[in-house]
Length: 306
Image (cartoon, rainbow, N blue to C red; front, side, top):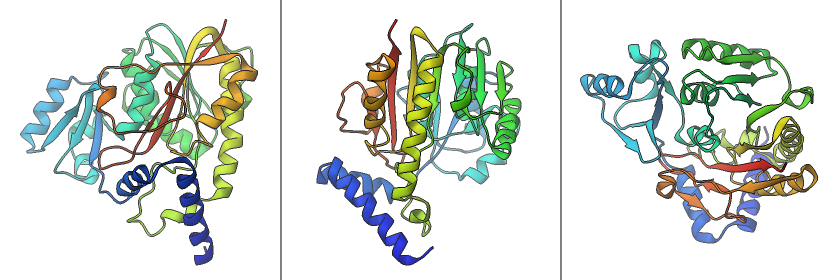
C-alpha cells in the first residue's frame, strides 16, 4: 500500500474522532491505541471450575486478577499468549483466550437455558462458546459463518470447548430464511475495527480505511434488519462492534429501528460501572474506550416490539 493511502487513512480516523469526541476523550483513545494490552482469558465452565483454573494458575506462578462483571474473566499479568497456550488447561479447552471487551455482549444478552439463540457472525467462536457456557449447554444455539476457513476454525473451537449445544450453519446471515425465529440474537457485526487499532504495529492503517467503514455500514444495516426479522416479538437481541465510530454504531441503529419496529433497552449488569466508557449519543447504549485491559467496543441491546 502506498504511503499516501496510509496517511489518508490516518487523517480519516482523526476526522471521525474529532467530529465525535472531545479532545480529552481522543487523548484517552490514542493512549489506548498505544498501550500494551494484557493477555485475558475466559474460564470455560463447561469443562472446568473457577477454583480449578485459579489453582492451576497459582501452581504455575502465573499472576492474575479478576474483573467486577464476571467470575470467569481473568487478566494475566506476567505471561504471553504463547506461554498460556502451552498449558494443559488451554490445550484441553478449559480456558479460552478472549479479549475482555468481546466477553461483554453475551453477558449483556443474558441467554437462558432452553432458548433458541442465533449468533449471526460467529467465527472464531469465543462468544458462541461463551453463550453455551452461560446456559450450561442447555440452549439451542445456531452459529452462522459463511467463510469456509473461518467456519472450520469455529467448528474446531466449538468442539474443543465442549459446546455441544451449538449447531453450525455455513451461511451468510443476511440470507437466513425469514421463517426462522429466535428467542435471542447476537449480532457482533463486521466492522472497521477502529476500537482495536494498535499503533505500535506499522501495518495498523493498512486495513482501516474510509472504504472499509462504508462497506461495513452497509453490511451492518442489512444484518441488523435481518436480525430483527428473525427475532421473536417481545424478545431481545444485542448489536455489537469493535468500532468506536458512531457511523457504525448508533447511526446504524437509528437508521434501522424505526423501520423494523424495535427499541433500545437499557444495558444493566453488575460491574458495568467499572468499565472505561466513552460518551455516547444515546445513554441506553455503551462504548468501551480502548486501554491496557480493553479493546474499544460498542454494545446496544434492542427489543422487538410486539
